[in-house]
Length: 592
Image 1 (cartoon, helix red, strand yellow):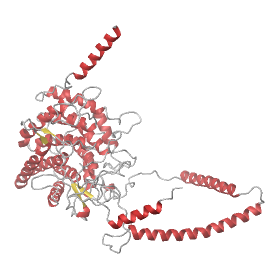
Image 2 (cartoon, rainbow, N blue to C red):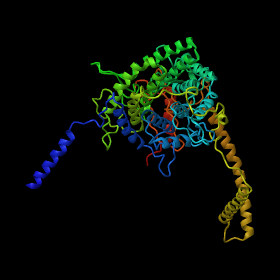
Image 3 (cartoon, one colour):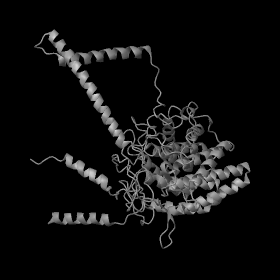
Image 4 (tube, rainbow, N blue to C red):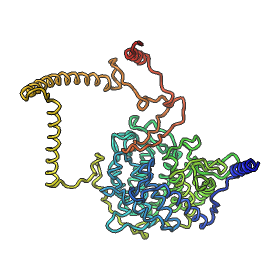
């Protein structure tokens, strides 16, 4: 009887605990700097928990799988922001170590272990992180190390050299090297990173050459209509259509990168006394800010607008990359208010309501305070997601509410201390070989002697094995030698025949696979996989990033299933269907 009563009581307690209303881990007062610092400190600690680059045997500056290299740069940029807003130096050394370890042999963020899959936007995020370090006067590296400003200039220099006029009359490709998936795609975030960096370098250094590149990038975006007359920034297009078939997804980081860049151009024009340019960029800042309205959700009751990743969040299809995008919109909207101060009231209102909603749903994980992806229209409930992206986004939007109290970004003329190098990155300019930056030590005489010795040993071993396999112990040496010569003579003849057959087969493959689109000779059509099958819908799918050379898993960008998506493949033509049926019949074996 006692056991039954005890069991019943325990069950009741557990049920009561599970049914208890969830209490938010953070009681955020958005009007209190102390409250913001307290909450952001805990969020930063939980964000750092995902990082292993400061542990023994790990690589500084890298996030663990499945995160990609570019997001590690964005992550370190968020720690620069954390220090900038709070003054907390806890993570400064970790940040400096990571930013410096990944610079590569030419100090331009093209490390050999990443360039096999590195894109222009990937490199751009690291460039923007060190640009923030220079603007915020993040502690300078030791004198014998590359400096923040010089690193940002190196990224700019290498990217300016990649401006591609062969297709679409300009713009940067998404990927740097031609064998990577996405090399044939020109996307807004690659242009946005470049524009953002060019504009900020122009303001920091006073050099109008950077401003010229920012103008050139903006004009090209408008020309190809990636940036439309309503200041909506679309994802990109493939070069096969001369960038005319635009993929119209809107992602928050695209809009944010251009918003901050435009604000920097306004400040640059204002500083130079260029009134007409100043007015033009004032208008563009306002237009881009209006364009961000799509990223803020307000319900039918008129609740305060809250940030949302509109392209994927509502349908629960945000991949690992996209889960972090709100961090960058928050970061860049806040920074915009420093160079375009008339935007402060509007931006602060949006950031305040978003921060309150973000903090309210941080009730997940084992510690009961991990942050999820969804902030809007969820009644403050944690959505079950955790990771670098959601955690970084929540921290950034909370920190952004201290922008009014934060120091203004500096320039060379207003107290900047970071040393620059306008010619940095020169060794990587124009480089097309991803392995070209691997620096090998000079070959010494000892290396050559060792190579010769290894060759002799290996060759002798192989020769001994061949002799052993061909020798018949029951025959004499003379008979074995005669058999060997006979076997070699027959093998040479067979080799000639095999070579001839292979050449013929290759020619036949060439006829079927290398047909051009205009070939109407009736040859065998190439077999088309899902990856290269023409898509019948209005626009093609947004390409995914190439896999890491380490085969690191990465969730693909998933498009909601529509009648025109890849899940609804076109039916085979009658001719191809007939050939497939014939092929299957040939492969069938009789049932015995």
